[in-house]
Image 1 (cartoon, rainbow, N blue to C red):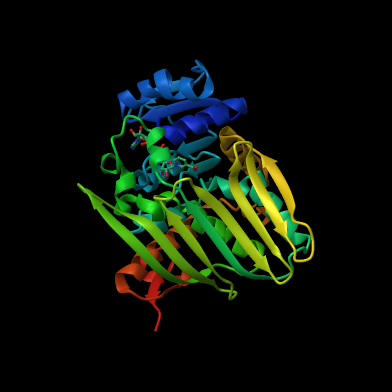
Image 2: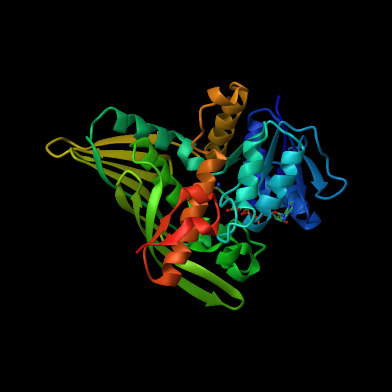
Length: 372
Ligand SMILES: NC(=O)c1ccc[n+]([C@@H]2O[C@H](COP(=O)([O-])OP(=O)(O)OC[C@H]3O[C@@H](n4cnc5c(N)ncnc54)[C@H](O)[C@@H]3O)[C@@H](O)[C@H]2O)c1
């Protein structure tokens, strides 16, 4: 049985605690806010999952929180707290750390230090882009590998979702101004909150052998609301190292939401529709001259996190020898690559021009260069 510590008793902290308990693991949750711990026990968890689970231990985060005896540490706090907590978590030498997305702020503070320290430790570090290890994305990978659509010419991913749904899950917040979501510099806004889309583009580009994102041409719409300042729409044109071109759209204004990915190949198209119906996700395979094939992939919201934790457990059971470890699609390197694209998007909008990413400079702003 794995022993898990979770930082953050908010929305994701509840999802992860529930998923870990469904896997039979022991769970301790730490939050800096006593009110958040009480809300988890009295409201969020029982409302979502039927009843509170007395086996979950709740602690105020700080000097008296439990330390040093966990297999896995999960960080589910606002993004600007992720890196400092992850650096401290590494000192506890757990087998694994999962940091929620986005990994850090677009200023990339601490990102390269985290990368270096993670690379030099025996702890495996993951970033919570759960979709890329979910059943639907695994299925689209299988269909692509069957050769149905031929070689991929272009790839589009959209996560367009009005954030009213997020605020419904946080009834104690009055709006974007009350939370990191309303501040792009803290990792909020469409570029941070829906960075699942950038990450999924990157993942699928790797699946089709086209490498990392090399060029980013972005247009962002920034909004001010009281103190809040966030991008409501983030449009990206991307080119990968292997020459794949495509688009990513992330926004917090679209209602009803649309979350989809489209791989257009030389012989046909694969379309992934997340939350295609209340029953789950779907993949449409469209080959000219043939009937469309629809693959339904039943899923509930808790499944997203159960699948993710199962994936991490499998990784942690793998070999200790670094040369034998297979990279995970949610490994920290991928989370860092996603942050470079988020940072490049803001730089592209600010400069009004396309920018390139030089991975040899690490996860730093120096990696983001102007394109001549
Ligand atoms: N993977 C997903 O699908 C998914 C879903 C929801 C949220 N998230 C991510 O999870 C993170 C948190 O989002 P949320 O909606 O749960 O936020 P939230 O505001 O509901 O909860 C965050 C909690 O962290 C606590 N906290 C802040 N600093 C802390 C610290 N230093 N130590 C311990 N606790 C601390 C806060 O008191 C709060 O209770 C964000 O990065 C978000 O993007 C991911």
